[in-house]
Amino acid sequence: KIIKVLKLALPNSFKDMSLNASEIGTLTQYSKLILDANRGFNLIAKSTEELIWERHIHDSAQLASLIPKDAKSFCDVGSGAGLPGLVIKIMNHSLDCFLVEPIKKKSDFLKFAAEKLGLEIVVAQERYENIKENNILSADVITARALMPLKDLLKLFSNSIGKGGIGIFPKGKSWEKELNDAKDLWDIKYRLVASETNKESKIFIIEGLEEK
Image (cartoon, rainbow, N blue to C red; front, side, top):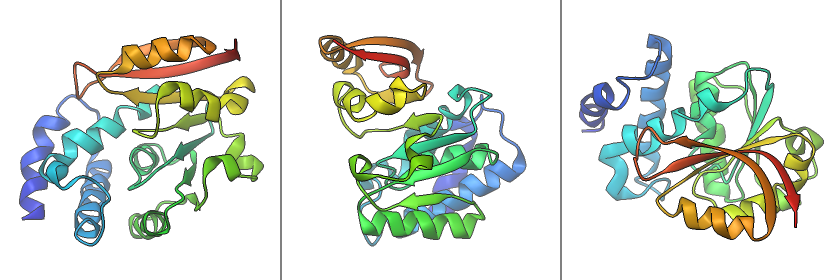
């Protein structure tokens, strides 16, 4: 059943993305790992399993092209199943990858999946605000998907972004309200990119930040 779902979903969801055979193979293997683990505990919503390529893999993969060419590292916070963190690493092996996930079952899955897929990553089983390791805090790029409202993301990552880091945050149909709420508290240098997977969604690229 799992293999059938993946084969049916792959052609349409990735028809416009430049992926080589190795990347497709690794992403397929990764998707199977998620679906298998999802039987035991909640990594993704059960209702999205049959749409895993569109709702999760493609939605994560589109962020990889938004990472600056000169970036050497990224940190995915609240990484959960590794979305988008492991997907970005699969698509760009040269980036140092730090995944922050406080829930043990999920952080254990991230380590297990990375080992199975042959990916070199660092997993921190901790809340981001408690992280002390400088290599994580000084990552060139921060990603966070479905973690918290934009104003709270900016507060959490204000130090890193203030020191030159870039935040890449996909947001759903409430993106405009989240932006207005954030602008009440912050002067933000940002760009908006249209989502490839949902016409009502946007991706924020936060390039500068100053508290009002």
